[in-house]
Structures are given as structure tokens and as C-alpha cells.
Length: 202
Ligand code: TMP
Image 1 (cartoon, rainbow, N blue to C red):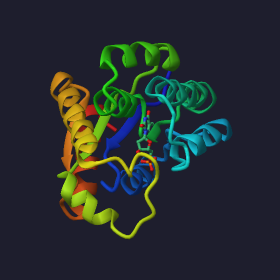
Image 2: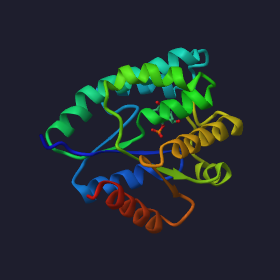
Image 3: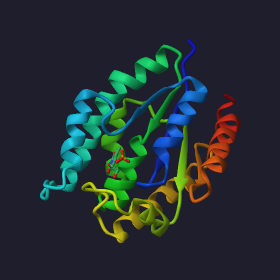
Image 4: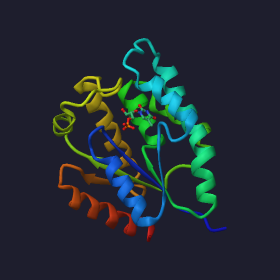
């Protein structure tokens, strides 16, 4: 059976993921989607997760909400597209949960992985494009924007998330590519395209 390829974009807020995910999806003729909020149900979950008036959400509940978004997204969008032979480019995936709820919030990454194993039902991205830049560079890019519940977190949180992404990239070099997102957008786009060709041959 011919199936499409499943490609993840990961990185901190302001790294340019959404722009580059859209660009790659157009180049490949892929389905462009995202977590959280890639489905109508997921959008409602996202509204809770991003709402700055939500001040008492427990870390475990937050992890389960992102996993619920993901379970719906995989079943409704990702799995059918891949089975139909379409490539899928996703702006964030399960790896964001490991980075944000695991490394960022301090839940044991192995436990976050376990609940997400169940949520994704075996469907992990084949290639992870991690757009990386120093936290202070990204903060500058975010200036003047209205910040959501995650973006309002302090530097320590964002540094732990970044360190978490790096640790996962080191652990799985056959699946992860780290791309310098402080470069100009054309250079980033070229690096993305080259990585997809090299790792997936498409
Ligand atoms: P974004 O889609 O605008 O990048 O914002 C999504 C936010 O949600 C971002 O701050 C990371 C966070 N997030 C998690 O904490 N866990 C997850 O599993 C996902 C997908 C996103």
C-alpha cells in the first residue's frame, strides 16, 4: 500500500514554523495541518489552552487536553490523508507535548510520551524539522504581539522547552533535523527543502 509521508515542524513561538510549513506543503502538494486546533473539536480545546483567563489548569490536565486534540487530529486528518497517499505537513505534533508539557512544565517526559503513544495510535512523524533560534531573538520577533497563555510564560520555561527539543534531536538524529531559524527566510526554506529531499527522498 502506498502511503504519504508525515512531516513535523517544531520549534518555539516566533520561529517561523507556520510560514515554512505552509511553504513546504505547497511545494509537496501536501495536506497542511496543525496541532493544536487542526480539527473543529481541536479548535475548541485550543481555545481553552490559549486562554489567558485560564489560570488554574493543572499540568496533567493540560497534557491530557493536548493529547485529546492530537487523538482527534490523527484519526480525523492525518491517518486518512496518509492512507490516501497524501503527504502531511503538520505545524507542531506530539513532540510539542514532550517539549512543553514534559520539559517545560516538568512532567516526566517518559509519562507524557506514554499517554501520547496511546493518543497517536502508532502514528509518529517520520521527519521532524526543528526550527531553532535563541530565545532572546524570538522574543524580539514577538514584541508587540498579544501573547497567549504559553507565550506569557517566562524565559526559564522557554529555555527548558528549547533544551528539550535539542535533547530529542540529539537522541534521534535519523528523524530530527535542526535548522537555524535566525537565518533569513529564504535560507531557512532552502534548508527545509534540502532536509526533506535528503531524509525522505521527496
Ligand atoms: P502555536 O500553534 O501558535 O505555535 O501555539 C501553540 C502553543 O501551544 C505553543 O505555545 C505550544 C503549545 N503546545 C503545547 O504546549 N503542547 C502541545 O502538545 C502543542 C501541540 C502545543
